[in-house]
Image (cartoon, rainbow, N blue to C red; front, side):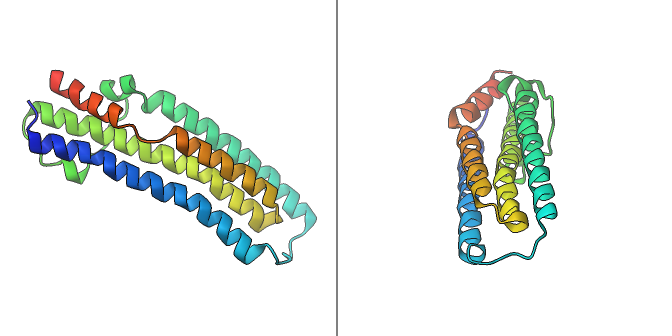
Length: 175
């Protein structure tokens, strides 16, 4: 049985995840704003060959990053993988006040979900960072817009679900 206070602590992790999600989403807007304010009118002293090489490399990194995100979600961030303990993380500090086996299992499951989601957020955000790097290395604003939109879509797809969190807590309580 999970105590009411501890259940509230477990469910509060959704709020923390939501706050982090908003921060990552705002980061995309910040990259676009910085590029527009500080780089749009500037002529960068970069050779054409370097700019083209940097573009190709950044697009390659974007592809690798998105593939890694898809793999990460399939391998570690689905409900079955979390319940099976495919990847174990250290229990979050806010959840270390657990008492009993079901509370400990719930803390482990919620910690796995939260940590896995943060990794997914970072992978999605990296796509926008590559877009910003495109502007820095080759003054390619269109690429930044494309990658910023892609990053925003990935973040929207990674929106933290309260239902998944409550299902994990319920599953921990059943076992």
